[in-house]
Image 1 (cartoon, rainbow, N blue to C red):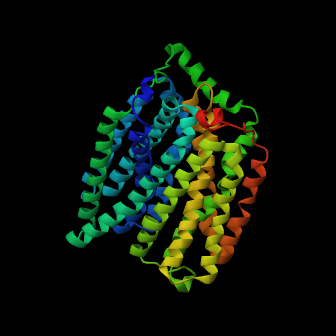
Image 2 (cartoon, one colour):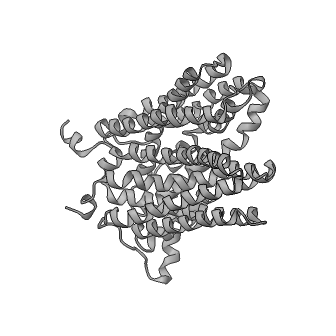
Image 3 (cartoon, rainbow, N blue to C red):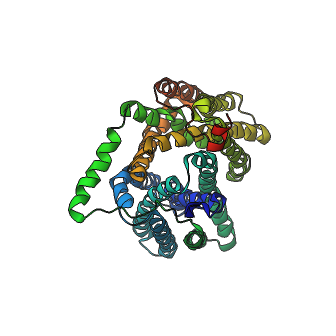
Length: 429
């Protein structure tokens, strides 16, 4: 029995992907609220907040370094310690006169470390689990990644709000919030130092120095030489083309005042709907998706998952036209959309695993997730502008139309009949 099997994945997959999702949310979502509370202008805040997402798009540039130097396990531990230190630095910098410049620099370091951690953690997942277990736990990893995002952008923001009520100071409130986040990340680092398995395949693969550059180049070229790479990349970029435009606008729609076409939810109402109905539905969808794929394979479930991630977007058409005031009705609509997202996103992440198979799996998976980030970022750039031109009602109709390209490209992607299916279930058929 290999070392990777001595520790149940339930003891490390959920916490590893909490450690992956939490810093991402702290970099890409929380600064918007933080700087707004501290009276930084909207133009300055949104400009720098957008730039903080760039390390996830460009992380393949240093992906081969993680693939070739040291073990993924060591990279995971080191980057988690670094992220904890960066978060502590943000907390300490807030009372200073030039806090904005200092915190932006620290957020950049946090973003770089987080993107590097993503590469190592995803590569470790591929090395520590066999193909069947990768499918079985894909729903778990996706779910806990999303839970971490919601905990940061919901729970930490709520905590900072409560601390502001107690202290009367946003600086003191956010200082306590980031100290809490730093302590949690440090705790994850020391937990993983003890609990992560030691798969035999997780070894440093660094060549002699004179061959490093050649291997670095080979890693990139090998990715773009995969069969049907144009079709594969089109699938990655277009799978969430509609959803990428919906995600930022849907939150604005729920919070926007009713005279402006929104639903006028308070922050507390918004937090409850996404923090209870949304999380529960997301958990259910992600877990169900991973389990079902492990039983019948991804090819069997690909089209149901495509429908599940896209068609529930129509809930927002109903919300925009009906504009219900009943919170249970709004929560149910959000839950339907979130369940579909969790269920359908399982197929997407598994296909990225399929694309990464073979040599340089860690770096190739990082390339896939970079294109995934690009596919989410580019449509988001114009979504707010388009919503203002069309209005919420017509915009949500457009979102449904924007899902059509993903269905068309899915017709062309290669996919084996039993990919993702648990080996036991394969033998029983």
